[in-house]
Amino acid sequence: MVLFTCSVQHAAVNFPQYDVMSYAPRMPFAAYAPAPTTKIGATAADHLAMLPPLNIAEQQLEIGYLLGSVRYTTLGRYGPRAFRDLRVAGPLAAFQQRLAEIGTKIAGRNERRRPYTALAASGVPQSINV
Image 1 (tube, rainbow, N blue to C red):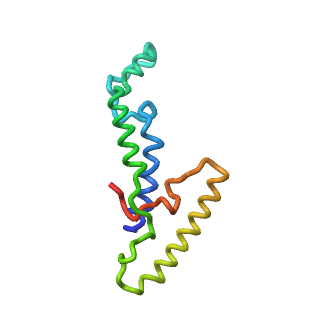
Image 2: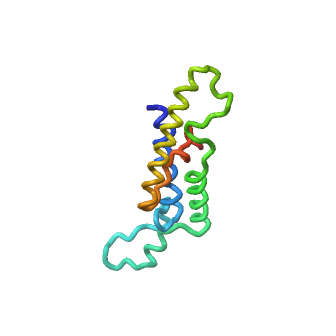
Image 3: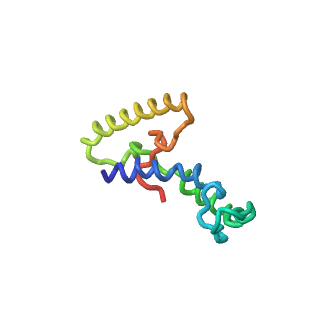
């Protein structure tokens, strides 16, 4: 459960952030003016005033990119000296094979729909990146 939470689940929650949250009008981190208090009488300017200033929107874009785009490692891929116990080789090879199968299945599905890449086996990190 710890491995799943720190790798796959984190990737599922973390990596879509850039697509979803980097465009400030879609999901601003904060409101910069009070929201209209009535349905009648509110103007487009009232709603636009709630959006962040350009420099803050740019920071939101950068934060979204940093959180949702940077991957340092890949689940199942380890350096040649990561495991000294030779008993790890067999289970690790089986794990890598299963990840490859899952990756192939996801790639096939992505050909028939809008691609979902957050959980592509080749992009899931070994743990959280930040």
